[in-house]
Image (cartoon, rainbow, N blue to C red; front, side, top):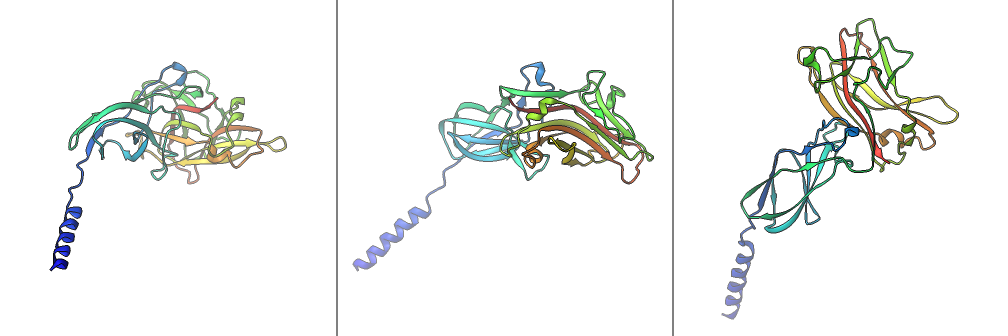
Length: 293
C-alpha cells in the first residue's frame, strides 16, 4: 500500500513539473534604424541598415531583420542595447554589425504580453577617416585608365535618374565599346589594413543595368599595380525607364589581407562588356572609403 502512495505522489509531482505554464514573453517592435551624420565631412546620410542585433543586460537575444516584433523573456527594468546590422558585401548570408555605426542604448521597462515600440537611431563612430566621392566637383577623384573605351561623365540630368537630387557619376557603353576602368591615386589608401579582422569599408550607392566590378589595386616596391576584385555587382534594373538605386558595404580586408607585403593600395571600378551589349549604364553616387585613424 505504501508503494502505491509513493507512486501516486511521484506522478502528481511530475505532472506539476511538466504542466508548469511557460513564461509569457514581453515584446519590442523595431520598424527601422534612423541614421544621421554629425559633420559634413561624413558625406551623405544614405544607409542600408537591414538588421537589429539585440542585447539585453549584455546578453545577445538575437539578430532580427527589420521591421520586426521581437520576443524577450524578461520583465521589469533592463538595459537594452541595439546594434545596427548590414549585409556585408550585399550577401544575405553575411550579416554583421556595422563596425562604424554606434549602438543605440536605453533603459526599458518590460511587461509580459505587451509590445513596446522602440525607435533606435545611430551615427558614425568617432575617430574615423573618410574619403568621399559624391561627384559634386567638376573633376572626379577617379582617373580613367588607358585601356578604356569610354569615360565617366558627371551629370545631373535627367532629374528622375538622380539618387538624392545632386550630381552622379555615369558610365555608358555601346555595342562597339568593350572595356571601361577607372582608378584612384590616393596615398591615404596605403593605410588600408592587411589584417582580415581590422575593419575598412567602401560604402557606395549604385544603379546599373549591367554587371560591374569593384576591386583593390595593390603593389609592392618591385611590381606594378595588380587587380584584386572585391565584388561584381549584378544589375539593379533592366531598363532605362525604371532606374533602381541600391547601396552596398564592401569589406576592404577581404582583398587586402592577401597582400601583407604590399606597399600601396588603390581602388578600381571596371566594366567588361563581353557580349557587346548596347546602352550599358552604370551610375554611381556617394562613394565613401572609411577606416579607423
